Image (tube, rainbow, N blue to C red; front, side):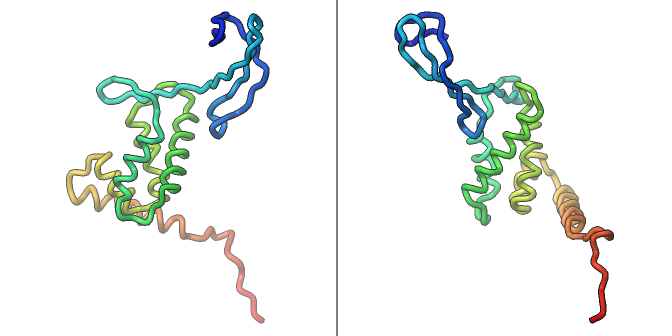
Length: 165
């Protein structure tokens, strides 16, 4: 790390702190030659590989913009979209790879979007998964219904016995 003041190629770390919700580290450094201090920010890089083979940095903003279109006219707030984008980024980063396929990012969006708004989920899935017929929509709706029924069922061991009063 070159000192921005005297261009000395050495520096000493004086302080380190987490920044940006733990996704970056802010370091205060001091130059041993001129004794001036400066700040650096370290982040991990995550690249998304598109269908064309080109790579670009992961962007929460692109996630939000893509999902915002599917949520148009739905009761979804900007905070909801920001939380969804954060969840997607955490899922993608948890995979532990520095480059991830754009298709995998799309798959990571589907789960949180299904929990957020089922109509927006169907809109996004219809474009992302390339629905071509009514049967594709029917199959997706049936799957949503089945998952909704499964989540509403009470496990048999969790039922309370009825007692007479």
